[in-house]
Image 1 (cartoon, one colour):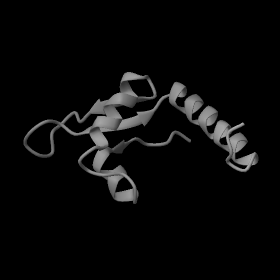
Image 2 (cartoon, rainbow, N blue to C red):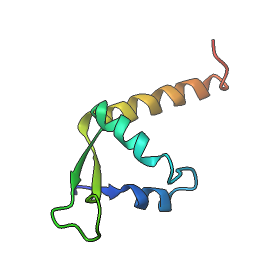
Image 3 (tube, one colour):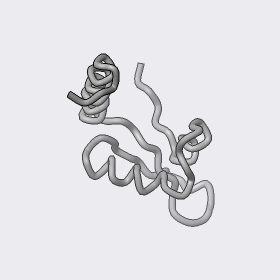
Length: 82
């Protein structure tokens, strides 16, 4: 099943760590690295810039898995750098 994308403010509302003031900076950087892609709304629901929905790319999934594996390996040594 394909997972739907999320709007930036939806991510903030679902997280206790993300902040409204910085979410779009982070999303833009991840998109520049190829970890995310975004699509603008076809029809604007409010005035101003169209909202963007963000989707994780295959490269983003691979990067997440590699980072998660590295964190697991690090923690298996008690979280101490060797």
